[in-house]
Image 1 (tube, helix red, strand yellow):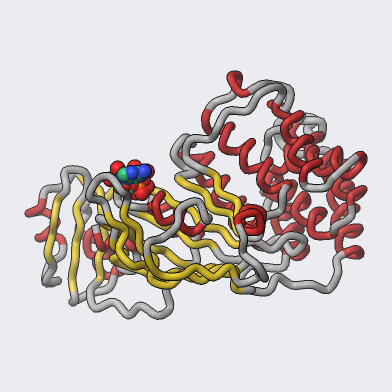
Image 2 (cartoon, rainbow, N blue to C red):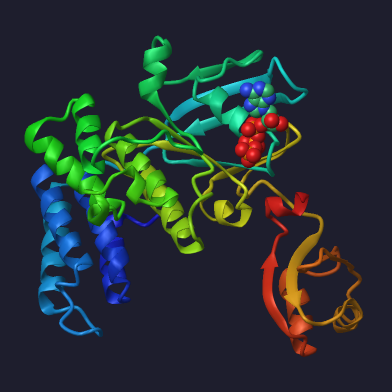
Amino acid sequence: MQQHIQLEIPEHLRHKDYALAVRRLLDLSYDSGDLSLMKEATAFSKAWNSNLYKADAAEPIAAFFSTAEELLAKATALLKNTTSTTTSLLQAVNISKQYNRGVFKLNPISVQIASGNILGVVGENGNGKTTLLRCLSGQLLPDSGSINYSLLQSPDYYAIKSYVAFIPQRIPRWYGMLKDNLHFSASIAGMHGYTNEAMVEFMLERLNLSSYASLNWNQISSGYRTRFELARILLQKPQLLILDEPLANLDIKAQQTILTDLKYMTAWTNHPMGIVLSSQQLHEVEKVADTVLMIKNGTCINHHTTEADYKPERTIIEIETTASREEIAAALNAIEATIHFNGGFYTISTTAADAQQLIGSLITNNLPVTYFRDITHSTKRFF
Ligand SMILES: Nc1ncnc2c1ncn2[C@@H]1O[C@H](COP(=O)(O)OP(=O)(O)OP(=O)(O)O)[C@@H](O)[C@H]1O
C-alpha cells in the first residue's frame, strides 16, 4: 500500500533521496489545491534543479531542509481529509474489432479500469495493443461488445473526449514555443491569468521540463515530446489517461522515472485518475501496473491482477550466466528442472523448489550468475 505522502517525504529526506523528496513535495502541494503553495513548491524545485541548494557536491545547504519542512508543514495544514478512493471509470465487455482491410482481428476482450489504478497492456509488435487502446478511448468503434464510461451521464463524442485522454505513439507536432502551447491548452481547460501561469509552471517543473519550455518542437527529442504531450494532457485533467507505448522513445532511466511518476499521479487526490498504457517493456510495466493484460495475435492470453489471486504450480526463473547448460544442471543438484536457453539467458522451470532454493543452489555451487529474475508470477512466463 502506498504510504501517505506527507509521511513519506521526511523519510526521503532522512535517507538522502533528495530529488524524490522534491518531486513528492510538488505532488503534495498539488494535492493541497492551493495555487500559491504550488508556486512556492515550484520555485523550490527550480532552485533545487539549478543547484542553488548545493554549496558543494556533498550535501544540500540548511536552507534546503528548512524550506522543505516549511512547505511540508503548510501543505499538511491545508490538506483536506481526503484519501484517494477507487472509483470505477470504464468497463468494456467483450469488445472486438476487425479492420476493413487486412486479416487482423481483435478478439473479444473485457477490461475494467478504476481511478488510482494502472492497467498495463503488453504484447509484441502488431498484436493489437493500439487497436484495443483506440477502442477504449472512443476513437474506434468496436464491432461488438459494450464500453461503459462509468462517470459519464451522456457519453457523446465530446464528453468522451474530455473524459478520456489518448496519447498516441506518434504525437502530432506542435507549432511555436512549447510553453505557449501549454498556456493555450490550460486556457482551453478554463484556466486564466494567475491560475494559468501557476498551473503551467507547476506542470513543467513536475515533469522536469522547465529548461525546455522556451524551445520549439524541432529542438527536443521524441522522449521529451512525449513528456510535453503528457504535461498538456494533464492540464486538461482527464479522468482516464491512455498512453500508447509511452516508453518507446525513452532511455531506461527515463522509463523508470515516467512509470513511477505515472504511479504517483494516479494517487493525486486533487485529480484522481486511472491510467492504461501499452508497452513491450513487460518487466518495467509489471513494476507499476495493478493489472497486466497480455495480447497475442489479437487475443488476450492473460489478464491478472498482480497478483494475489494467482497460485503458481511451477517456479520459473531466468538467469544470465557464462556457465553451460550442463554446469547449471550439475549445480541444481537433485532439483529436477527443465532448462531452456534463448541465446541470451536461461529459463529454469521446476515444481520441486522455490526461487530462493534454485538461486541458492546455483550460487552455492559458484555459478557466475550476472542476472536473475523470478518470473513465476510474471506475464513473461507466457512468452
Ligand atoms: N487502420 C488499419 N487498417 C487495417 N489494418 C490495421 C489498421 N491499423 C492496424 N492494423 C493492423 O492491425 C494489427 C494490429 O495493430 P496494432 O497497431 O493494434 O498492434 P500493436 O500491438 O499496437 O503493434 P505496435 O506495437 O507495432 O504498435 C497489425 O497487423 C496492423 O497492421
